[in-house]
Length: 336
Ligand code: UDP
Ligand code: MG
Image (cartoon, rainbow, N blue to C red; front, side, top):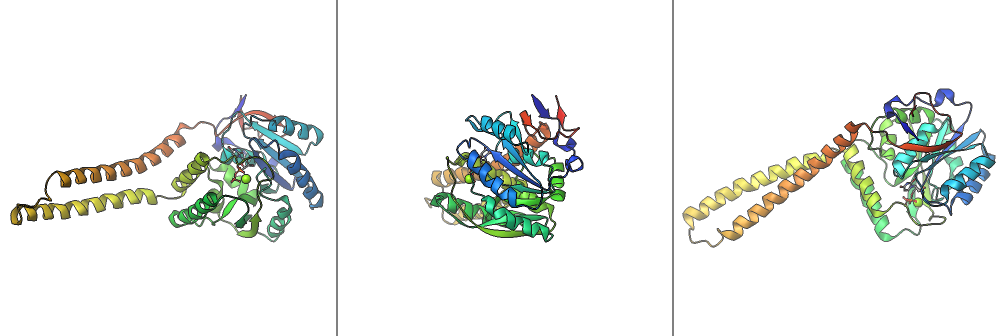
């Protein structure tokens, strides 16, 4: 089994690329029903492109027939390259792995369920050829996605934009085209908490959007469970905003102001209205619960950030690889 020694030691692939123009990076987790259709539609697209192309399929520890199907594609067509991760590391990490193995001058990131239609890729390429280093697809509608998913996604993107120090465009997924220059920079970023949409925005350069009516999945069930989506949302907020920490400070200040007010009120009751029923167990119980809640919330927020620091300093590899098919392995990338 191979594993990454350290993300910071990963060399850029660009100097050993040969001459691939377009890399399609596709993280795949249990998508056996989608692989054949995905491949066919990508091949139809690739025939129309003005440069050579490679597919980098990243199997994110699938437990269905995804990996055998990928192996078969690779055997039949050497432009299909693949990396199979040793377990399910999650979409963002699988995507990170794919970016590290891609060798093209323009790297196109897409989902395997055909919700990011290959037919839109020429529009992305056209913008790239006009000089944009990042071209991302912005969703103006989502078909056949539940009301809860649509609403939470709508609120999340706007919430993140409010909290974040940088401009992270709303309603954009990972579907995008990135120039080699941008991908090289992403590959050099050592952090483990990888919200690629945010990192992509952070890098800068010339960026533009194309709009898209997002189709439903071609087949199969959604692989982003509620838990995975919530984890992604929370970690993206922590990666791009310190506002929650500030919120803890504000909550503390608010609780202190309230405490001073209650102090004076209690003294007033004690000296000028000693018979008041308000002073007593009710007041004390409320105060204890309130202060306890504020303290726990602040501790929780702090704990989340400390947890992130802990994850970062452990320095474990981002992922482990169990099998690769025809992907050039950068010399400094692996330790056996
Ligand atoms: N995916 C992955 N690892 C995971 C979950 C999902 O590689 O742990 C892949 C999945 O196979 C698909 C993409 O990420 O290609 C998006 O997943 P999904 O369609 O479930 O999410 P949604 O489109 O609802 O955001
Ligand atoms: Mg999908």
